[in-house]
Image (cartoon, rainbow, N blue to C red; front, side, top):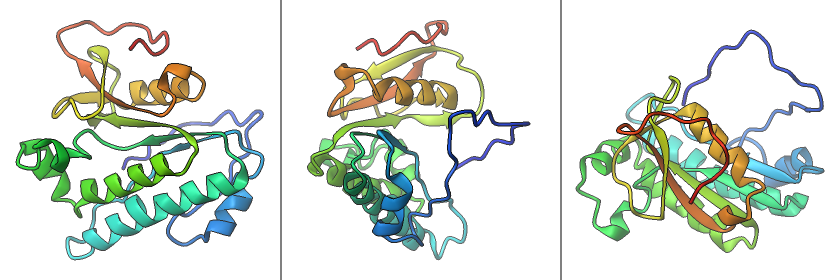
Length: 199
């Protein structure tokens, strides 16, 4: 994960709250989420000590994320958007030997952990959208947004800015309800101004 440093944050109409999916209980997270209509889950463990990556991925991308889904449901959240990764379900569509799956999953078996949380959200009864971006770039978009169906993309990159645009649009766009959206940039097509989800 990457934290960008910004000069200031406009918090007009926003209440910033601390939430830790590993340390906090479901009831603690429920209290934080009370009054929220929607939630974007952008959790992801930070690779570090190679001997502890499996434990960290399990705690954050699986158990912690599932706890957050439980808290959202208990708090009355109506819509959940979860950021995951392309190839999260790679084992089930013959991609477990693809370079993208092998390299990404080498970090704590993170894709195997993420699919458990994805399936947990699907079974929760909440209205959801699972956004599976390709490799994340910290630069402006260089290509047009490409939205594809579930289990269709096994490579590609995308600007974090476009991922944020898709997540925000998914909160209110009925076309994204209870769907998995795999997204990358189409490098062969110039970038366009984001104008909603075109699927």
